[in-house]
Image 1 (tube, rainbow, N blue to C red):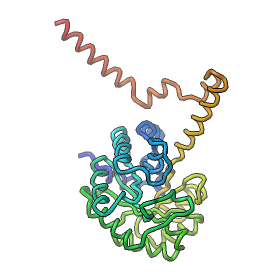
Image 2 (image 1 turned 45 degrees about the horizontal axis):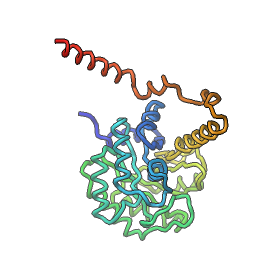
Image 3 (image 1 turned 90 degrees about the horizontal axis):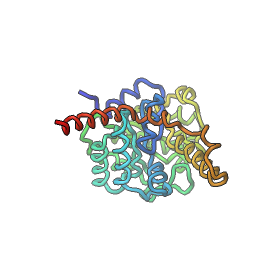
Image 4 (image 1 turned 90 degrees about the vertical axis):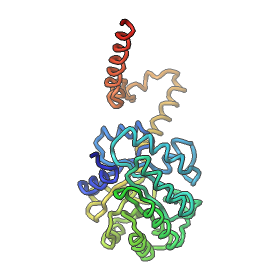
Length: 297
């Protein structure tokens, strides 16, 4: 029997130290990441808001929006997908529904955060977090709603730069007791901070290595040295894609031809390879050939 997404995610965690998890904004980028050799993927709430809706990451997308992109990715690749579900989009009943729908959509894991409902990007000022008990209740609602035992719940905390290390350590302890399978520690600025948490954390810890934020771009080797289990690159490809697209549009507008852009482009053959186009084309030809034969008869 085919292993569940959660089992595949757990296996990847055991075989890579740390496990690199790359952000994918749609099915096609998921195919690219798979071809590059990655073993786990990520769907960012910011990625959904930015790429699918042209909106900033300020809590303006919802469960249905994220589910749509989740389904598209999981139907395109078999790699386990970690999904950002922000604050769960509501009360305990809404969080429970979110978990059930994510499992149905083929996600392997989700992360749930302790910000208030009117959330902000984790690397922006003005963040506010809920009381520890409220986050504990969010986690319990998520855990109780699981319809697949291998599905994983990750608790994200934004408390480090608001309440400090000691209070955040206490929060993490309570989150794990409530049933969190993994911890997402946001806003870390020193390797020593990761080390302190891995020493006191009984579950895998994720490092968010996002560009232009609070956290330095630590290497996977550096993260491994302090016990970090996962290295997340949430929007790395998306940012590169955005810069490349802007360069193309500006050049095309200015030069009125794409001739000087060809060397920067993915070729038609490369695109076909990623999409397995020839396989589909052969199936279509075979179908049309059979149809022609039937008509002749």
